Image (tube, rainbow, N blue to C red; front, top):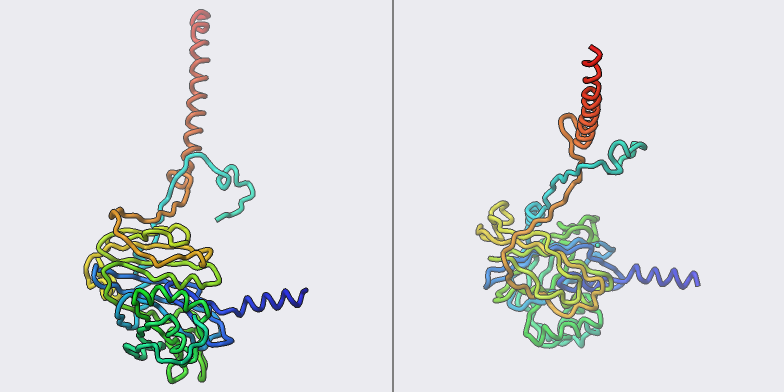
Length: 366
């Protein structure tokens, strides 16, 4: 029984993650790769959609393939990692103090102990069912832009390039084929020198895909703002989605597509020129930035792609409060001064009453 349990646990550890965010990630056979975090910035001006995405990966894979369906002919370039630093700074929560009057458990006289408290198909037949629109080397990425008229077409192409698709992927690709979408297929692999920017582990002969990979920027024509998510149904572990949306107005998903309710972390107009990396995406124009987070505890419940709609331009920024005892001067609690004042006033009143009661007796004795 113990051996069986250990084998089961080991099997769960080496199982590759076939889905991540808006695409499918497939490692070499007998290798594993997991996506700890996928962060995407989406720019939409009503005609063209641009998606800049950055993966943070782990595992022992020296190379992997990643597939993303897109509704139109795509252009692929390298993205700027500084873009996500700029967006993180812009959407950072505001920190404010919130004062309270009466002392609490960590305040004198209650803190007597002085303690501090401070998340495809079976192997193809090898037929040339894939149209290669373009192929280029971008840093550590071998990028192919593909068309396909059959859900199993990508299987043959990837098999030729040394990758195996999970059996269920062909089924999940069917809706995209029916809508005549195209695909961006990317081989994440070391360059000719055996090193690659965007990985954290390398040797002279091989490179393991680890850490934050170089961002990719994908552009395509679209009259609606859509973020592909259907392939994430294949994920075997809970998924999380982080989106920065830059458009003319505040944008939010039409529905939760099988995940938790999307949470707005930030909404507001920005200049679009705060950083060069941001200006390259916005064209230097003011845009409305919406930052969203969403969790998918059960990925198999994902039932479609995210379609985003315009909503009222209501600004929002998360505020994190720090509760502090209300003090004055050199940290003297206001409650202590108030209580002391009340006690002094009460004592003075008592003394005054006693003095007044004694005064007639003193005069009569005189």
